[in-house]
Image (spheres, rainbow, N blue to C red):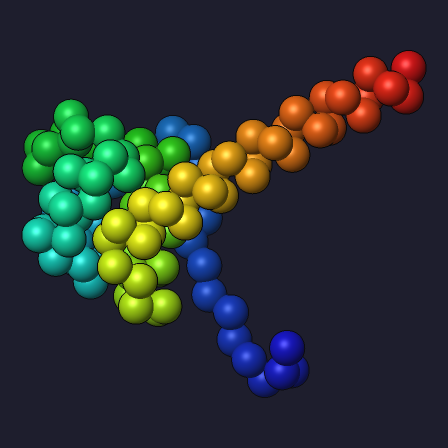
Length: 104
């Protein structure tokens, strides 16, 4: 990484919620894309314009938007990537549990 490169990020506490409109404005994503992501099952279908979005869902939306915008991956591709990442995380957690049992 270049010494002059600036990294930015967003810290979100587990109690933080954000509205549908704030997501669209903050991450410059259209409502159509968010609806399409919801239809593909990327996040819970009970999210509406009036219901606040929780931290876990927000993280998933942010990851999906980054994949879609930064890497130009279409929504079905984003779904596949996120599902594979979820599976990888699950397998790592299982491996950690097994390693702890072996060490005992």
